[in-house]
Length: 356
Image (cartoon, rainbow, N blue to C red; front, top):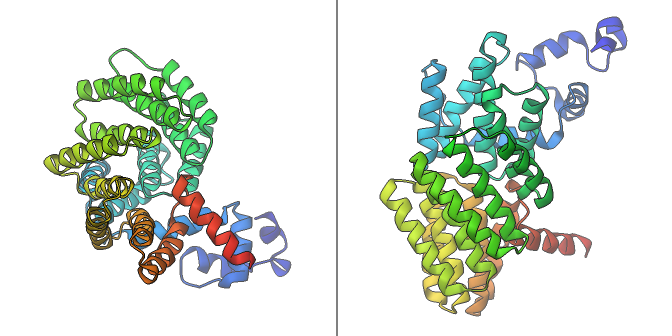
């Protein structure tokens, strides 16, 4: 900024142009946009992720009450309406931005936005937001959930050990009676332990997470934690157990109105049917999940549905259908930061295709 202020005639971007860009009155063009990102120290991927999320958001609500926006945003999110949930969180984020007297509300809104971004596979963006909160530093009442979200990001970006380190600090800061925070810590820890193949330990920690969620009255958390049990069964190569766990979780989600989780459970059902050599049931579950994900514009759901539809089409010797699903999986993978067997498979395949 000093270069612009002290030497306006030699500025990379003229001050008058910069002012118009900041007010969204002028398109800076690709070259100037790149320079602006460097000027403000903004990672290119972070900007792209924000634009992706803005595209997903619904019409911004008229309400300007921060507490109402927060509660309604979380409610819409849990109910499966990604667009409305994001719209509320975007509005809240803009409303409290730059207001020093609302520091805790601003940090709370940023944390909620980071959680939402992570839920949509934008873990790089989520981690960047959490890092910024940690450097402020966070209000003491938010320290534990911020550490937990940092652990969640590092876990799904591929570093289980870093995740366990953050979880250890979060657990050390727990206070008596904080069942919600305790549930989040044990949930994430169990999930990391599954990836580290420490299955016995994961089972015991998962039981603690579910017990804490029950004490906190968090049915949404209970349903999310059921994903750990399903992944555990898959990792143990127990396809029948994985199917049973996925069906129980989908029934639980349906009873409680968790639409997004319900459609994600359909994908897990389809995956289990595939391992049980029941291609017909697999295609049925996966096609239903894809249709629901398309309606909700849920890109992470679309990626995993297309990925397993690709695998299912291959098992029934349908090369044409398999090729269509693979191309779709290759497209939607770009919206998913997380490191999983599925994303690694697609990324390796893309690398091989590009090297030819």
